[in-house]
Image (cartoon, rainbow, N blue to C red; front, side, top):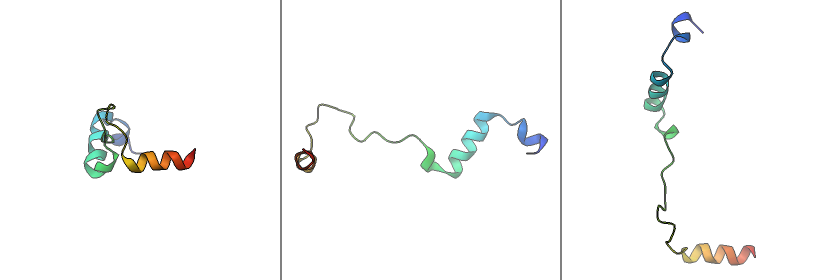
Length: 50
């Protein structure tokens, strides 16, 4: 690690990595509303596991 790298702002490093690798960003929430009933395939999978 060079002297310059050791004094970089962590936020700047994080933003640079995020620009290079957007897959590291927050995972999107698929179902925000937890009151949504399960899809039929989820119910089938649950029944198979039981």
